[in-house]
Length: 152
Image (cartoon, rainbow, N blue to C red):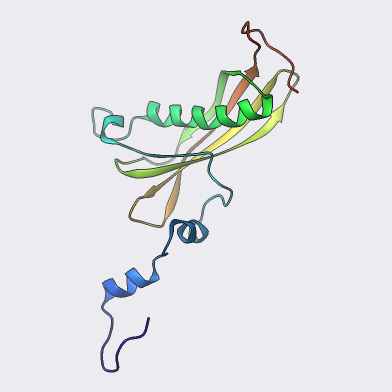
């Protein structure tokens, strides 16, 4: 953007001009996983605990949904979550934050698989992202009778 001679941009105008024009550009600038998120959600007031912070159980359920998406695809059908390993909450999530969940299969067995999930938060009006938690979810592929079945 050019300015007429003899004029200058104030700090807010410079900051606004330095911002990404699209979410895609913001994603490219952000320091977080560069693959596409499996799930994205906005933390809402109804997702808070009595102290007004986002409830850890809400975040855990979002992570389970993201992991299940990957597990169901890899197993070509129904799966059940049987374990969650190593959950560590690194920083809080606040009302209005955009939560992005990244997931990938890290191990497969005969009937089970493990999916690693990372949750990242970004203020909807900001471009900086912070990892808030991570965990490994174990699933078992099940058939129509809810019995374990081999992975394809």
